[in-house]
Image (cartoon, rainbow, N blue to C red):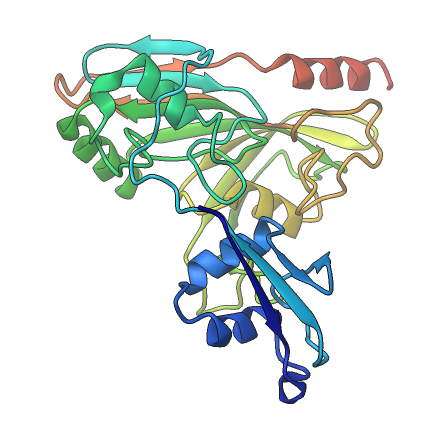
Length: 309
């Protein structure tokens, strides 16, 4: 059952971050669980949802709603999937923008993982119980190709390929501004943004994890550039963070960019698409390459830009 907890902030806690105060006050809940509750808006200070970094004044009332923990097993959901390839070992899909890959804070249903499990029940038990078959991810608002493992052997093979960077991935993106160079490479480490823990950022030398992104200009417009990008590594939000660090954030990116500012028309999701995916088949060892056409939302934006929009 859902639990409703009400707490009073003691005056001595004035100036303490909300997340740290909660961790000390509700030691029966893990820090990760508390963080998820804060992000989902389930923690309210004097009736107002607050962020983890909110500083308490002392004397406030804090209400915490704790939903029952999610089932350890993912429930299959019949969802429409765009299947690019499938055999007894692999499932390759073209994920639409707006679909979350696996359950997380605020996204319990409607995930790609649940839809894939309904389509291929044999994936149950492959990988994590809440992420059956999932070997890599795309951000919610990024569209394009994902490969899922249908067997434990395929899962081991694909995760090893991704760890060794032998799987190839190419993306298409429309970014703000005009890149001067036709080709380039960003080799800059990425880690958690110390000011915003839900975001990533380029880290200072010697910190973060190495991240490498190569790009090639496909077209230039008055205020935008159309790019092809290749990943040398696979860090969280890598392309979006690297492009933003160059001063050319992905169009429509509400976290690292300028959201809808300057766009000739509204854009669902952001203008980033995983267009090419290459892997070795886990059984035959055949090199396989899959492509996904540019989604309609990006085609419309390119059309407007080509016509001076």
